[in-house]
Image 1 (tube, rainbow, N blue to C red):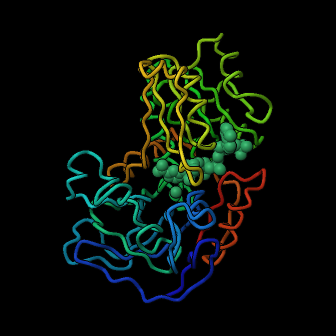
Image 2 (image 1 turned 60 degrees about the vertical axis):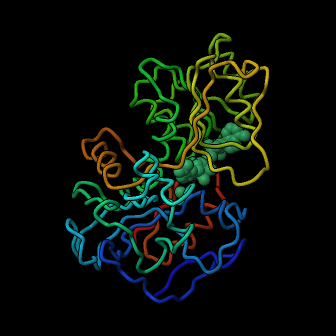
Length: 351
Ligand code: NDP
Ligand code: ZN
């Protein structure tokens, strides 16, 4: 079978591989829609997780089941499914401890395009199908469904990690597709003022649509100063980080009030250390909490997030600025993600 792979750090290309084997609990799936992720860019072009050779990329998509293992109960060939980017081993001790995304070791619930071939192949393997797949509701189209793999669960997780409460004033740093979903998540969780940090006009418009009340352009002045100005010098209750650099944490710690919480889902692809400013962190006594996380995966998460789309409370169409038709177009879509033209939020390929 054919797949678009990371050949080595800095190089992608089409390769031929044997089709994956289906274990008794697993499923083989063919893609119906696919999307590249900024994480693929960190992985290939920044070498963020180290060398990988001929590994098929991709962890965002929706698909149709081709084969299931003998122990799979709820799925059969022909079923259309939602597939999370993170597919944990649900029997692991880490999952029992409540951190399924780290099943088998830190970040090891992230298998596609990390430890094994991802979704940009003609067929891909899903471990523990009953626990990791969800049936795709008829009312959700395959392209929107691809946004539920990673963009929605990751952005919403930033809002969860920041522990947004009713009436909170929140700053969302980064309003690419993940940050936009952090804005939407904060809005759903009851934030009042949502200060969204970004610069590209299309992202800014989308952020307003998802609930941002104020926009901060980090290219037109210091982010913290702008936050302080908008909050009468008080700072914010919560911060979601879905963009920026290793320096962004300094800004978040500075702008959050004592007792506030920071939720980071940004994948720091480069830089050695994340520094915390001593004085702004209350000399270590501020009760400013820093939470960070890989998105939770699995079936229940997919079903819950899809239900928000089904009832019309979450419209994912504003995320998908560039649409392609045909499986091979995934290469063009990935390269577009790397270039990140100003009008791009997220490309999606309907296969
Ligand atoms: P994008 O690159 O599309 O968006 C990044 C955003 O950050 C943009 O709005 C950009 O602004 C903004 N930004 C860039 N630099 C700064 C800065 N110095 N200060 C403030 N804002 C800044 O990324 P995605 O939305 O696709 O992904 C966001 C991150 O989430 C990535 O690192 C990705 O790898 C990670 N991720 C993490 C996952 C997890 O499970 N934890 C899963 C999936 C993704 P603009 O472009 O408008 O100038
Ligand atoms: Zn991703």
